[in-house]
Image (cartoon, rainbow, N blue to C red; front, side, top):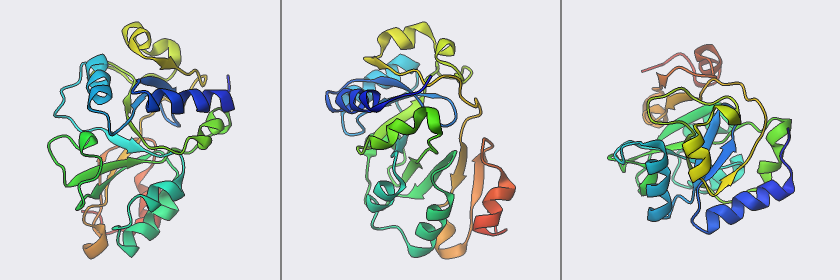
Length: 209
């Protein structure tokens, strides 16, 4: 099953109206809402049964839009992200201007950023220009959902929009910490996932923290 332009418009409307959506990413199914809406973020966390203190990530479907939203990025980090993204990564970045605080949990100085690689079945989502706060579409602590049917019925029923992009790879994103990359070339993998360490080292160098 493939998404189309109408699905992308529906997602934009859902975000703009303060709704919560179930959507397919490049890895697993996710939950999304407007990162600036306290009420929408609270609903998303409630659907997951996730403690509000746990951070989420901000997702853009366009790499250029993501990088343009962070003009404070240093040149070394920006160059690395231009090579790494889009991809199956959640990148942790220093957040000196404290952007998207609702996604940051207890650490406002760190921002998690996602730009998924849009395979053909979900390519239509590339038309969505606004950022979204996203987390995996599963109950907190339970397995990630590779198919829409694997998303808990309570989550599907509680969402305002549900998009079916067919079966996904099923391995979650790799969490990559680049907070020490600009000045010291330090990086580390905080969660193993779909992007491999050797592939990351080919871009970032071997100086892992």
